[in-house]
Length: 388
Image (cartoon, rainbow, N blue to C red; front, top):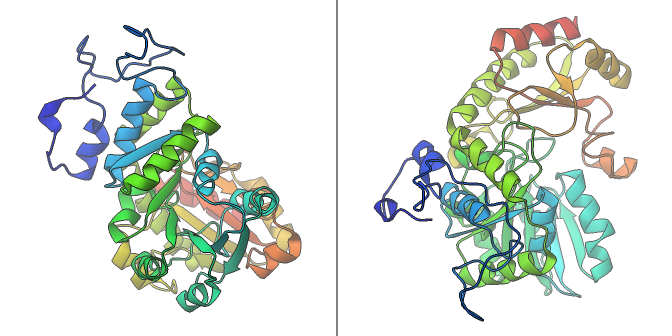
């Protein structure tokens, strides 16, 4: 399933999103990649197959998705998974007993739970450092440090870290740098271009874009790392179904146009909320008031569709606000075409102990908005009415 006309062709992002890995089917001419709902494949003779043996190991629909994912991140190798955490778990299998991880302190609660409740049982320890200070990463390096894990922008406080500077530090110490790029999406940020070794996504979010699948992705340009990760993908087996792979492929086709609308709406709403008297603090890297605004502007091509705010009045105000919203749906997840409201303390970051959560700045009055692509005026009116 490869059209040689597209080999070595330089394409802009929106064109890649529609065509990379998604050439017409050579057997039938089908413009859309077929869904290969098969578990196994006929072999011409013992040990002789046509590139596929068993669909856990490889499937043509999933292969098309993996090619598309690699292209969007300007990477050489893509791997698709059944969830973002499946992708994360597979990457962490690069480590062995006695190894050490450095992780940014602001990160998805599911990643924290995995590191503390699962990976720790492997004999792998994690040190969490203030993502605002690059020096803290350097100070945390131990002789057994093998991997640095960061998000940028972070979940849920939307902090930004200098990927290029951290990559330089990691490589000087023979450490693998992994960047969770879920919040930015490859449309706004490509960490491999900045020196990261591995990029991870929850394809559930912006890449899928329609709140209808669960999936994950890993992209790298390091062949040795890819070989290991491909082995673990097959050995662990947390792979997406052909249909879920197809749904992510369909979502990717409109990624560019969706991300432009997400950002346009988010920036307008952030400016509105920043001036609202009932908002105590706002977190959005596209505002000049954001501490890392200039860094975000330098390493990202846009600021994304996520906003976090702290409401005046504490949790009681949060409850009242959430109950009055009509368009913003109270739900976990993000990145879909519809706008969502999340309460991190009890939802996405509920796995963090309260003291740890407060220490990291996730307060009881913090809410996270995934701004959809509805009409901006309707979204602002919804927020105005809920804050009234």
